[in-house]
Structure formats: structure tokens, C-alpha cells
Amino acid sequence: MTDDGSNGHKGFVTSALEELLNSGKEYDHVIAIGPLVMMRAVVNITKPRNIPTVISMNPIMIDGTGMCGCCRVTVGGEMKFACVDGPDFDGFLIDWDEAIARGRMYRKEEAQSLECKACNLQNVELQAKRGGN
Image 1 (cartoon, helix red, strand yellow):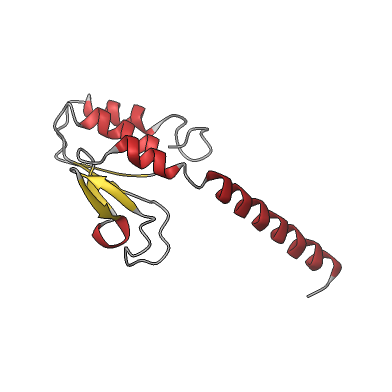
Image 2: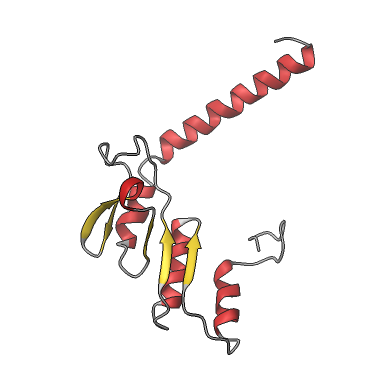
């Protein structure tokens, strides 16, 4: 399922989840990975139904040891580091407002990096067309 229908059904994962949960079948847990806003929406559906929900957080991770603190997330009122304590956490316990705010902290730098990568890719493609190295 994709937002635009380019792979499978067109729609939002939350719509499919609602359909499954309303189908009469019983589900004992849900696992979600993807954009933070989508994962929070999944939790907003599963929490009232008391269906345990595991969320796989995907923050920026630099050193993989927790030393840099980039991947910190508040879970159940405690600071955790996705790189060493996770990345999987109980979705009901994640401080979603904080996680989403932290996820937006480096938007400018991420856009610059993406632009740089696109320029590098274009240069590589041009060199390949010209028969260069």
C-alpha cells in the first residue's frame, strides 16, 4: 500500500489498519515502521483498542553508541537512545510530540545533503555519457 498507489493499493496504512481491526478478526499486536507521523497515527488507532504496538524508531544515528545523543527519544518518561536501547519501543510510551519535533531539527541540513547528492549523481551521469571516468 502506498499513498499514491504506485505499489499495491492506493491509500494510507491507517485506513488498511482500521479495515483489518474492524474485520472481526482478533489481533494481539501491531508493528509499525515508517514516518513518525504515520507511526503516531497507528498508535492512535491501536491504543484505544489496547493492542500492543511496537514502533521501530528511525532517528538520525551518528555513532551507534548513544554518545552523540542524536537518536535520543523519550519513552515512558525516560530518555532512551534508539541506537543502543532500540530501535524498537512500545508505541504507547513514546513522547510523540518530542520525537516529531526532534525529527524536524535537521530538515535544512538534510535538504542540503540531498541537493548535494543529486548534483553529484548528475555529474556522474554526465561523465558516463561523455565516456569519462
